[in-house]
Image (cartoon, rainbow, N blue to C red; front, side, top):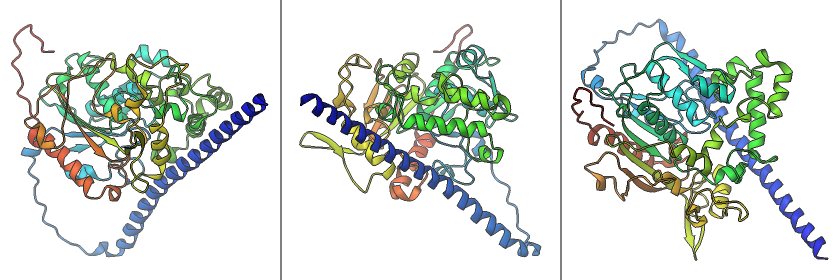
Length: 468
């Protein structure tokens, strides 16, 4: 009797998990279609307007060209907005903006397009060459270990070629984008770019994190990463469906489609032109391609993966750090639950609930010493709030909680100032209308801080002396 009851319970659990997988897959596919169709509709509308306005082009309108005063503009360091997972930069998805037009709030803003699913390491390398120019060099040793080409995209002209210690940059990273900047800064400190022996950590003036992924997320396990190692995927899960879709997308290699949106795996050379049908089969079986190694984004976003990354990353004494950690949960009678029904995006509501109830498997060793489930219950549907405040594992970095932005003035470098914001993970991106006035408040405060409250007095460097 008990064995049959046990079997029935297990069947119910499997049925529920399968149902959840189907629902999650449909919701994510619909959202992806919504983003894609929105971009296409925007481009078609723009093209139609241009077509209809052509008959009036024969009317000559002389407009006085006022020379732009660039003297002040050239002194200001650029603000670089770095997108997160499944994100895109300027030039992808037509006129759609990942940061919902926030880049228009300042005259010197750059929005690089990095691999949307590539690893933190690869994206950091891409970001460097986007700014300095040249062909992306992923490093010989790394490329051989991960099974992809050493060289990638060519930037004939860097977007900020003068970048150095005397011309540092402000970075704003959303989600995984914040961790990309931390890895890039460490690479600069370690002089990890061949041919650029003068790099150092002071090339980064400030880093502002918006829902930044510093310490990993339990959502990776819900989506299909194995909690045992944080590297491999479960046989049947949402990430497996994603993996199959991405491999087929890259293998088909449709030029106009990849120009519109690219997952960033071109350096793995899995196009049908290069690997043929058997190459596709090999990738799908997990024997080759980006998912056959750890060189893609999800292993970096597990708690174990973040711990591995953080063990090599430092916070530097001459860089300013500020973090906005988001949450959409609250406690009712001691139980963490979603704080709203209509205030959470449909894409994220199920995950907010699941993450708030996450329990690390009791038969699996804890991801780090001192881990407690209750610390990881508050979340925004994609990341746990504890992961977004400041680097915590394996060593906690200096930090200070602030309720209001003015509480931290004057800012001190080397300290992570962090603020908790009531919002889900995509509240401040893609769709400006969702956030309403809060959108302007948060981005205005970010840009004002970069322009008015963050500055550096360059220390004098004596002969044979290097500042660290």
